[in-house]
Image (cartoon, rainbow, N blue to C red):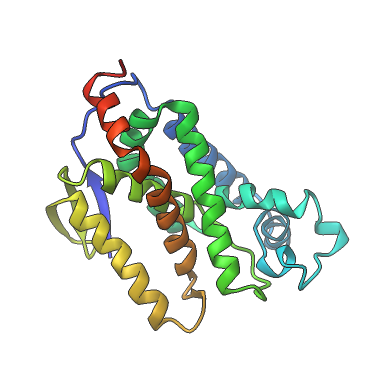
Length: 232
């Protein structure tokens, strides 16, 4: 649909977006590690550390050899796995453009907790709509969706440079670009034949976005005041 390129929204409280950079680095490092694995080992890795709805709902069992961590822990680990270069680059580009200002508004620790909470909520939504799925859910997009919601609430008028349809550069306000993105997730979820169609977990995106709205909206004024006062 589109790729974000730049938002020109400077930091006001924190000096550097350490958590955002750390999340990007961890995602990239995990992905590079998975690229060293043979195909069978990669499949086993994704089954072990990806989140499998049917396993989480006790409708299927994972082979004992694949039970590397408690199944509930995959609610966190799945966010750091990606299926290919474009999957990784897309998620990390959205995180790079939008997450720094959300981290600026929340502070480092609260932002990390917010990010992880949105990722868990995304998995919950996906599992709700696909409780019998034995395919592992992987990717940061659910957590990133929560970041997009927070950015839209806090910085709706900021002009974002995007690449529309992967070829047309365009400047548009965050409210329209991110609101449009969410609307597309809703439409696509209704047009698709399941919770995951074409390799896209639509309901994970929707769940993460809604979680971001719920977590940010009650504190919008306080967070904007923090930014306006430079953290004072």
